[in-house]
Image (cartoon, helix red, strand yellow):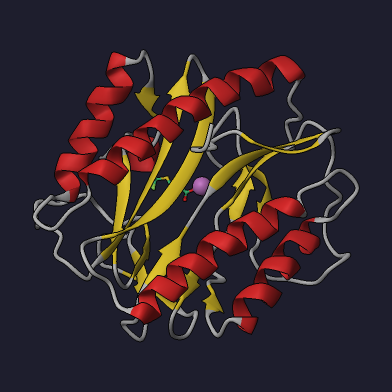
Length: 250
Ligand code: MF3
Ligand code: CO
């Protein structure tokens, strides 16, 4: 079932998103060789608490941390850990903030120290793919229009689109209908309606798109060991166009 949100509900989700965006801005300043993803996770948990919010991922289906921290060939749902990040790594920090029951979900990939030109290209393509997807999140379009736009652009830049994980509706719980694949056919799938709130979160790989699951039952990584990047926003579909609830630039 799809839960359409009122203007008031979207406003509350925007407040959660604002806090999440602030969190990412602080994390951007913390990222450097030597820092650990466990330190980042601890920071997030404290920051949210201080601001009257909670990390929705903690306890979700038994997940134990406030954030997901996926390093290099990890595609998503990496566990925060005490191993220091090193120059040349990339790390995706993903989190869902709950502020008074309103949720927002956003992931961002950070470069640690100096990264290669190839990985830099992957990051810039992945971020641009997110914003191309958002442009297509308008009333009357179909879910396939978002995926098709992302896939066409990503593949034209020589990177691949992960199939096994998708965006999703969000609120009142983390994963709601509909699924938002980052690949697909234009004009196909469910029609987008005013009041839908979805995540768009392309995971793009330097190598093949196939993923395999770690023994921990959570962490997905590339089968060829090449790196994977991800940028994610929570987006409300409004009559005035897509509204990014987790925007860091305001
Ligand atoms: N933002 C993540 C996603 O949409 C949330 C995953 S739930 C967790 O995939 F428990 F893994 F954190
Ligand atoms: Co998500």
